[in-house]
Amino acid sequence: MLYPAPVERLIAELSKLPGIGPKSAQRLALHLVKAPEAEVESLSAALLDIKKTLRLCGRCFNLSEGELCRICADPRRDPSIVCVVEEARDVISIERTGEFKGLYHVLGGAISPIDGIGPEQLRIPELLRRLREEGVRELIVATNPTVEGEATMLYIAEEARALGVRTTRPASGLPVGGDLEYADEVTLGRALRGRCEV
Amino acid sequence: MLYPAPVERLIAELSKLPGIGPKSAQRLALHLVKAPEAEVESLSAALLDIKKTLRLCGRCFNLSEGELCRICADPRRDPSIVCVVEEARDVISIERTGEFKGLYHVLGGAISPIDGIGPEQLRIPELLRRLREEGVRELIVATNPTVEGEATMLYIAEEARALGVRTTRPASGLPVGGDLEYADEVTLGRALRGRCEV
Image (cartoon, rainbow over all chains, first blue to last red; front, side):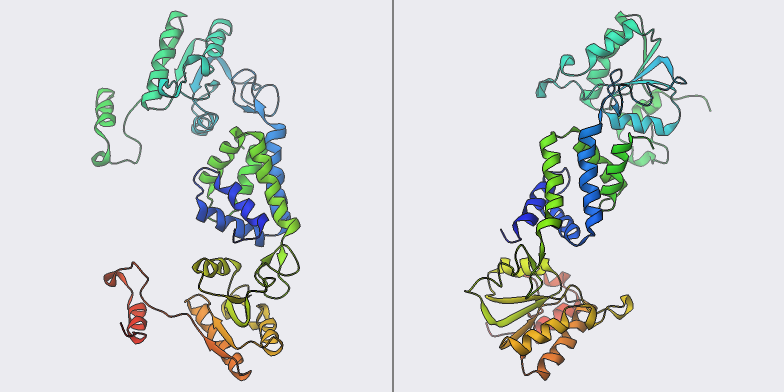
């Protein structure tokens, strides 16, 4: 222990954060030691606040301050179209596009048998209940284009089909501003298969 | 504002930290949202703690929990040799070598006229008082090998010489494990000038 105990403790706490190694933790801690007291107090309070005031939306499991999240509580949103995503951060990514006016359903992850995560560990039963009860016409499954995400999509699509709900997925293809030369062959193959008239 | 207010507030607070951009701040905030309450509380408490319990050593201005820091309070340290550094983190770097058994003096920065930092803005007057009062025989000036650090070293060396105190600096040279090919010419030049018998 080279620093005074409170500094070592802060370094240890900061090192637990994702992407923060021991060197970054030390740099951050020494910054905070020198920072104005008000700044440190306000960070400390913001941390406590997320645990005190945040919960999950009772309908879609997005992050929420009240019983329903801002999107579920908005009467202008179309409840007949639901977009399924893995995490709350994906809701934000889709909201940023301004392209989607329906509701969401946050699964809390993807199916991954290796990690012991099956449909029951995710909010898939809650999704199927919504499909049965809420008059959903279309389900967009926007899980990540990874092995786990695709497996989750296929599982959900099958269940939704059995309930007579149309299921779609976002197009795969070349990222806008990307370079053909650097596209991997799976992405490029899907872009070709999904080609459209100019 | 896309996330609930408490999350946006935490993202804003985290973005103020050095090296944490908006994307990292969002990733950290969402990690903390999902993290166990105890972990977040303990980070929050560690933050408040550094402001409540830390102060600067009354003698050398190193970080300290008491009136004197651990090094100044250690009777086994030799008070006749003092190592001057810019910041408290430099104390830790030198302590890690295990090569130094004297005391320190933390300046709190380096002389930089462009930023309006002169000797009076640093703890140079306090250093000169220690040289006059504490029977210091040797002063090692270990400021950073930058323009500001070297200017600070030269200023301190001149003042110390006037008080009859021997002033030294750590050797410049090739880093251990480094590669001659990648050494810059100033470092290599200093390494050659400072060559020693094998």
